[in-house]
Length: 325
Image 1: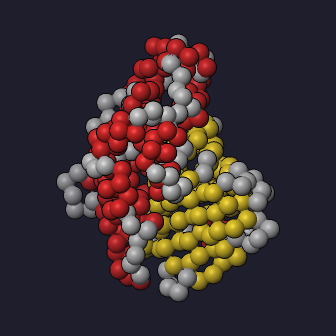
Image 2: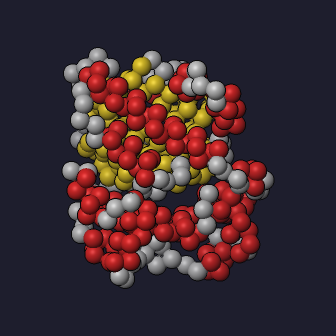
Image 3: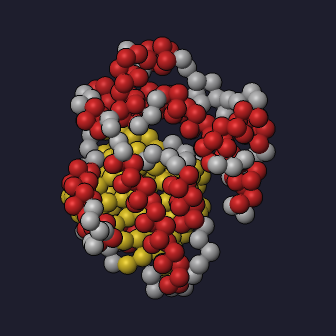
Protein backbone atom coordinates (compact mmCIF):
# COMPACT_ATOMS: atom_id res chain seq x y z
CA UNK A 1 0.00 0.00 0.00
CA UNK A 2 1.27 3.47 -0.88
CA UNK A 3 0.24 6.89 0.39
CA UNK A 4 1.43 10.23 -0.94
CA UNK A 5 0.59 13.16 1.32
CA UNK A 6 1.36 16.76 0.45
CA UNK A 7 1.12 19.06 3.45
CA UNK A 8 1.36 22.81 2.95
CA UNK A 9 0.77 23.57 6.64
CA UNK A 10 1.56 21.88 9.93
CA UNK A 11 -1.90 20.33 10.33
CA UNK A 12 -2.10 19.14 6.71
CA UNK A 13 -0.46 15.75 7.29
CA UNK A 14 -3.28 14.38 9.43
CA UNK A 15 -5.90 16.05 7.25
CA UNK A 16 -4.35 14.32 4.22
CA UNK A 17 -4.67 10.90 5.82
CA UNK A 18 -8.45 11.19 5.72
CA UNK A 19 -8.23 10.85 1.92
CA UNK A 20 -7.16 7.24 2.50
CA UNK A 21 -8.88 6.31 5.75
CA UNK A 22 -12.09 6.96 7.67
CA UNK A 23 -12.09 10.11 9.80
CA UNK A 24 -14.27 10.60 12.87
CA UNK A 25 -14.65 13.54 15.22
CA UNK A 26 -13.59 12.58 18.75
CA UNK A 27 -16.12 14.80 20.51
CA UNK A 28 -13.98 17.95 20.74
CA UNK A 29 -13.38 20.61 18.10
CA UNK A 30 -9.61 20.17 18.23
CA UNK A 31 -9.57 16.39 18.47
CA UNK A 32 -10.01 13.97 15.58
CA UNK A 33 -9.61 10.24 15.15
CA UNK A 34 -8.92 8.19 12.01
CA UNK A 35 -10.09 4.57 12.04
CA UNK A 36 -8.57 1.93 9.78
CA UNK A 37 -11.07 0.07 7.57
CA UNK A 38 -10.80 -3.75 7.89
CA UNK A 39 -9.21 -4.26 4.46
CA UNK A 40 -6.28 -2.01 5.47
CA UNK A 41 -5.85 -3.19 9.06
CA UNK A 42 -7.16 -2.35 12.49
CA UNK A 43 -6.54 0.41 15.01
CA UNK A 44 -6.62 4.16 14.77
CA UNK A 45 -4.68 7.43 14.73
CA UNK A 46 -5.77 10.40 16.84
CA UNK A 47 -4.79 14.05 16.58
CA UNK A 48 -5.06 16.75 19.25
CA UNK A 49 -4.44 20.33 18.15
CA UNK A 50 -2.75 21.98 21.10
CA UNK A 51 -2.91 25.38 19.39
CA UNK A 52 -2.40 26.63 15.83
CA UNK A 53 1.03 25.43 14.80
CA UNK A 54 1.40 22.53 17.23
CA UNK A 55 -0.32 19.14 17.45
CA UNK A 56 0.08 15.67 18.93
CA UNK A 57 -0.57 12.55 16.83
CA UNK A 58 -0.89 9.15 18.53
CA UNK A 59 -0.99 5.96 16.44
CA UNK A 60 -1.93 2.44 17.48
CA UNK A 61 -2.43 0.16 14.49
CA UNK A 62 -1.76 -3.19 12.85
CA UNK A 63 -1.60 -3.18 9.04
CA UNK A 64 -2.84 -5.84 6.62
CA UNK A 65 -0.26 -4.79 3.99
CA UNK A 66 3.16 -3.17 4.04
CA UNK A 67 2.76 0.60 4.02
CA UNK A 68 4.92 3.15 2.19
CA UNK A 69 4.20 6.77 3.10
CA UNK A 70 5.73 9.64 1.10
CA UNK A 71 5.12 12.82 3.06
CA UNK A 72 5.95 16.24 1.61
CA UNK A 73 6.09 18.91 4.31
CA UNK A 74 6.29 22.66 3.92
CA UNK A 75 7.87 23.44 7.30
CA UNK A 76 8.04 21.17 10.33
CA UNK A 77 9.87 20.35 13.53
CA UNK A 78 8.88 16.88 14.73
CA UNK A 79 9.74 14.75 17.74
CA UNK A 80 8.58 11.15 17.42
CA UNK A 81 8.73 8.22 19.82
CA UNK A 82 8.17 4.51 19.08
CA UNK A 83 6.49 2.28 21.69
CA UNK A 84 6.20 -0.77 19.41
CA UNK A 85 6.83 -1.71 15.78
CA UNK A 86 9.89 -1.22 13.55
CA UNK A 87 9.63 1.82 11.29
CA UNK A 88 12.19 2.50 8.56
CA UNK A 89 12.63 6.14 7.61
CA UNK A 90 14.38 7.57 4.56
CA UNK A 91 15.40 11.20 4.99
CA UNK A 92 17.90 13.36 3.12
CA UNK A 93 19.38 10.31 1.38
CA UNK A 94 19.91 8.34 4.61
CA UNK A 95 18.04 5.39 6.08
CA UNK A 96 17.07 5.46 9.75
CA UNK A 97 15.47 2.67 11.75
CA UNK A 98 13.49 3.62 14.85
CA UNK A 99 13.70 0.83 17.45
CA UNK A 100 11.21 0.23 20.23
CA UNK A 101 11.34 2.64 23.20
CA UNK A 102 13.28 5.29 21.29
CA UNK A 103 12.70 8.14 18.86
CA UNK A 104 14.06 10.89 16.65
CA UNK A 105 13.80 14.61 16.16
CA UNK A 106 13.93 16.15 12.68
CA UNK A 107 13.31 19.46 10.99
CA UNK A 108 12.89 20.36 7.33
CA UNK A 109 11.56 22.92 4.88
CA UNK A 110 9.97 21.95 1.56
CA UNK A 111 11.21 18.39 1.92
CA UNK A 112 10.12 14.78 1.76
CA UNK A 113 10.25 11.96 4.25
CA UNK A 114 9.57 8.34 3.33
CA UNK A 115 8.26 5.97 6.02
CA UNK A 116 8.00 2.20 5.66
CA UNK A 117 5.95 0.04 8.02
CA UNK A 118 5.51 -3.72 7.79
CA UNK A 119 2.29 -5.69 7.85
CA UNK A 120 1.16 -7.78 10.85
CA UNK A 121 3.15 -5.67 13.33
CA UNK A 122 1.55 -3.56 16.01
CA UNK A 123 2.69 0.05 15.65
CA UNK A 124 2.23 2.37 18.59
CA UNK A 125 3.87 5.76 18.33
CA UNK A 126 3.76 9.39 19.34
CA UNK A 127 4.44 12.39 17.09
CA UNK A 128 4.84 15.93 18.43
CA UNK A 129 4.53 18.15 15.36
CA UNK A 130 5.07 21.91 15.34
CA UNK A 131 6.17 24.86 13.30
CA UNK A 132 9.81 25.70 14.11
CA UNK A 133 8.86 29.20 15.23
CA UNK A 134 6.48 27.67 17.76
CA UNK A 135 9.50 26.42 19.68
CA UNK A 136 10.85 29.99 19.75
CA UNK A 137 7.56 31.23 21.19
CA UNK A 138 8.01 28.87 24.14
CA UNK A 139 11.28 30.66 24.92
CA UNK A 140 10.22 34.14 23.76
CA UNK A 141 11.12 35.90 27.02
CA UNK A 142 13.95 33.59 28.03
CA UNK A 143 17.55 34.79 28.02
CA UNK A 144 18.52 31.57 26.22
CA UNK A 145 16.22 32.27 23.25
CA UNK A 146 19.22 33.08 21.03
CA UNK A 147 20.67 29.66 21.79
CA UNK A 148 17.36 28.00 20.91
CA UNK A 149 17.25 29.86 17.59
CA UNK A 150 20.81 28.75 16.84
CA UNK A 151 19.87 25.15 17.66
CA UNK A 152 16.88 25.35 15.29
CA UNK A 153 19.08 26.51 12.42
CA UNK A 154 21.54 23.70 13.08
CA UNK A 155 18.74 21.13 13.26
CA UNK A 156 17.17 22.10 9.91
CA UNK A 157 17.58 19.24 7.43
CA UNK A 158 18.83 16.89 10.14
CA UNK A 159 17.45 13.80 11.87
CA UNK A 160 18.85 13.14 15.34
CA UNK A 161 18.17 10.16 17.62
CA UNK A 162 16.63 11.05 20.98
CA UNK A 163 18.80 10.28 23.98
CA UNK A 164 16.85 8.20 26.48
CA UNK A 165 16.25 9.42 30.03
CA UNK A 166 13.80 8.95 32.87
CA UNK A 167 12.35 12.40 32.14
CA UNK A 168 11.76 11.61 28.47
CA UNK A 169 10.22 8.18 29.10
CA UNK A 170 7.90 9.59 31.75
CA UNK A 171 6.83 12.57 29.63
CA UNK A 172 5.99 10.60 26.46
CA UNK A 173 4.01 8.03 28.48
CA UNK A 174 2.04 10.79 30.21
CA UNK A 175 1.21 12.33 26.84
CA UNK A 176 -0.10 9.06 25.41
CA UNK A 177 -1.99 8.03 28.55
CA UNK A 178 -3.27 11.46 29.59
CA UNK A 179 -6.52 11.12 31.55
CA UNK A 180 -7.66 14.71 31.00
CA UNK A 181 -10.28 15.94 28.54
CA UNK A 182 -10.97 19.14 26.65
CA UNK A 183 -8.98 22.28 27.51
CA UNK A 184 -7.36 20.59 30.52
CA UNK A 185 -6.04 17.86 28.23
CA UNK A 186 -4.49 20.40 25.85
CA UNK A 187 -2.92 22.23 28.79
CA UNK A 188 -1.56 18.97 30.23
CA UNK A 189 -0.15 17.87 26.86
CA UNK A 190 1.50 21.24 26.32
CA UNK A 191 3.25 21.03 29.70
CA UNK A 192 4.56 17.55 28.83
CA UNK A 193 5.70 18.74 25.40
CA UNK A 194 7.72 21.43 27.20
CA UNK A 195 9.38 18.69 29.29
CA UNK A 196 10.33 16.79 26.13
CA UNK A 197 11.70 19.93 24.48
CA UNK A 198 13.77 20.77 27.56
CA UNK A 199 15.18 17.24 27.51
CA UNK A 200 16.16 17.62 23.85
CA UNK A 201 17.75 21.03 24.31
CA UNK A 202 19.62 20.12 27.51
CA UNK A 203 21.07 17.02 25.88
CA UNK A 204 22.17 19.06 22.89
CA UNK A 205 23.91 21.63 25.10
CA UNK A 206 25.86 18.89 26.81
CA UNK A 207 26.83 17.15 23.62
CA UNK A 208 30.59 17.22 23.11
CA UNK A 209 30.73 15.02 20.04
CA UNK A 210 28.71 17.18 17.62
CA UNK A 211 31.71 18.22 15.55
CA UNK A 212 33.00 14.65 15.47
CA UNK A 213 29.61 13.36 14.30
CA UNK A 214 29.43 16.02 11.56
CA UNK A 215 32.84 14.97 10.25
CA UNK A 216 31.90 11.30 9.79
CA UNK A 217 31.82 10.36 6.11
CA UNK A 218 28.46 9.39 4.66
CA UNK A 219 29.57 5.82 3.93
CA UNK A 220 30.89 5.34 7.48
CA UNK A 221 27.72 6.89 8.89
CA UNK A 222 25.60 4.38 7.00
CA UNK A 223 27.77 1.56 8.36
CA UNK A 224 27.41 2.91 11.90
CA UNK A 225 23.63 2.93 11.52
CA UNK A 226 23.93 -0.65 10.23
CA UNK A 227 25.97 -1.50 13.35
CA UNK A 228 23.25 0.00 15.54
CA UNK A 229 20.65 -2.09 13.73
CA UNK A 230 22.70 -5.24 14.33
CA UNK A 231 22.92 -4.36 18.02
CA UNK A 232 19.13 -3.94 18.11
CA UNK A 233 18.59 -7.35 16.54
CA UNK A 234 20.97 -9.14 18.92
CA UNK A 235 20.24 -7.53 22.29
CA UNK A 236 19.89 -10.88 24.06
CA UNK A 237 23.15 -12.20 22.55
CA UNK A 238 25.32 -9.22 21.51
CA UNK A 239 28.37 -9.50 19.30
CA UNK A 240 31.80 -8.59 20.57
CA UNK A 241 33.23 -5.29 19.34
CA UNK A 242 35.49 -7.16 16.93
CA UNK A 243 32.57 -9.20 15.55
CA UNK A 244 30.34 -6.12 15.30
CA UNK A 245 33.04 -4.14 13.50
CA UNK A 246 33.49 -6.98 11.01
CA UNK A 247 29.73 -7.30 10.44
CA UNK A 248 29.40 -3.55 9.82
CA UNK A 249 32.53 -3.42 7.63
CA UNK A 250 34.31 -0.97 9.95
CA UNK A 251 37.53 -1.18 11.90
CA UNK A 252 37.20 -1.21 15.69
CA UNK A 253 38.56 2.32 16.11
CA UNK A 254 36.01 3.81 13.70
CA UNK A 255 33.25 1.76 15.31
CA UNK A 256 34.03 2.89 18.86
CA UNK A 257 34.74 6.52 18.07
CA UNK A 258 31.98 6.93 15.47
CA UNK A 259 29.30 5.15 17.51
CA UNK A 260 29.92 7.39 20.54
CA UNK A 261 29.96 10.53 18.39
CA UNK A 262 26.83 9.67 16.41
CA UNK A 263 24.65 8.14 19.13
CA UNK A 264 26.00 9.78 22.27
CA UNK A 265 27.05 6.57 24.03
CA UNK A 266 29.39 3.64 23.66
CA UNK A 267 28.26 0.35 22.13
CA UNK A 268 28.20 -1.22 25.60
CA UNK A 269 26.10 1.63 27.02
CA UNK A 270 23.73 1.40 24.07
CA UNK A 271 23.26 -2.36 24.56
CA UNK A 272 22.52 -1.83 28.25
CA UNK A 273 20.08 1.03 27.59
CA UNK A 274 18.16 -0.84 24.91
CA UNK A 275 18.04 -4.05 26.95
CA UNK A 276 16.43 -2.19 29.83
CA UNK A 277 14.02 -0.32 27.57
CA UNK A 278 13.01 -3.52 25.77
CA UNK A 279 12.63 -5.26 29.13
CA UNK A 280 10.31 -2.48 30.28
CA UNK A 281 8.32 -2.78 27.05
CA UNK A 282 7.95 -6.54 27.54
CA UNK A 283 6.69 -6.04 31.08
CA UNK A 284 4.33 -3.17 30.21
CA UNK A 285 2.92 -4.31 26.88
CA UNK A 286 3.52 -8.07 26.73
CA UNK A 287 2.81 -8.58 30.45
CA UNK A 288 5.97 -10.62 31.11
CA UNK A 289 7.15 -10.88 34.70
CA UNK A 290 10.55 -9.55 35.77
CA UNK A 291 12.36 -12.87 35.37
CA UNK A 292 10.88 -13.53 31.93
CA UNK A 293 11.69 -10.02 30.70
CA UNK A 294 15.25 -10.26 32.07
CA UNK A 295 15.84 -13.57 30.27
CA UNK A 296 14.30 -12.25 27.03
CA UNK A 297 16.82 -9.41 26.84
CA UNK A 298 19.86 -11.50 27.75
CA UNK A 299 20.17 -11.26 31.54
CA UNK A 300 20.87 -14.70 33.04
CA UNK A 301 20.30 -13.34 36.54
CA UNK A 302 17.07 -11.33 37.18
CA UNK A 303 18.74 -9.55 40.12
CA UNK A 304 21.34 -8.08 37.75
CA UNK A 305 18.51 -6.84 35.52
CA UNK A 306 16.73 -5.30 38.53
CA UNK A 307 19.94 -3.59 39.69
CA UNK A 308 20.56 -2.11 36.24
CA UNK A 309 16.90 -1.10 36.01
CA UNK A 310 17.13 0.68 39.37
CA UNK A 311 20.21 2.57 38.24
CA UNK A 312 18.45 3.79 35.08
CA UNK A 313 14.90 4.47 36.35
CA UNK A 314 15.50 5.14 40.04
CA UNK A 315 13.26 2.32 41.29
CA UNK A 316 12.82 -1.45 41.01
CA UNK A 317 10.88 -2.90 38.03
CA UNK A 318 7.74 -3.78 39.99
CA UNK A 319 7.67 -0.38 41.69
CA UNK A 320 7.90 1.31 38.30
CA UNK A 321 5.08 -0.80 36.83
CA UNK A 322 2.80 -0.18 39.82
CA UNK A 323 3.38 3.57 39.48
CA UNK A 324 2.06 3.42 35.88
CA UNK A 325 -1.25 1.79 36.79
